Length: 230
Image 1 (cartoon, rainbow, N blue to C red):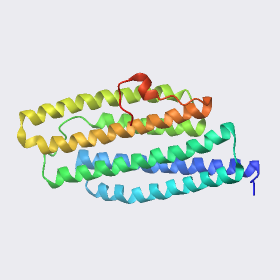
Image 2: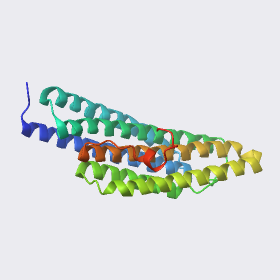
Image 3: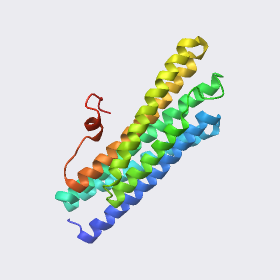
Image 4: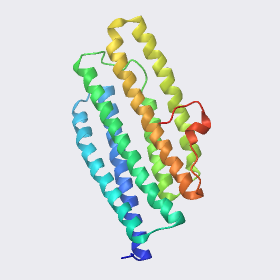
């Protein structure tokens, strides 16, 4: 049975609400995981793990809704792009949640093994810019704001630059002091997870461009053709 146009629009609005809820949950997970790393607040790691189940359930809800809309409405053109993109955004958010869990696990390892109480490099700003990218990417998707794509790409460049700078510093620290190899390794994994979260935000921005123009452009590869797919 084909559902009415009004029902279709209502279902899409519900998908947007679920995506925003997913995004808010994922953002909270990232903040908690990074704070656990920066401040040693290990109770936050358990909260991150619990919220991961919430994100998984929401992704399933979005996927089921999108599948139902494809089957019953049989959308064409922009509507089809809208449904497909919503499903893809849910997947990107779920992957971000997985990276937040990884950050929490590495943070716990660092503090369980009694490594230095202060981070070896400045991670706070890198995490902050990534959190802003998440906010902007979801705002762009839900409100069809294609102008935000440029800001998201610029912020991704900032995160990439900070990742490379922090990576080089960590290698130098580990080379200079062998007792810090473990801490440097876990910290490198943490900043790698943050950098990947930023990449997923850029993927959402690409979906916004696809939704609004019908053309899917790989923004990351356009800025750096030698960069690997993420």
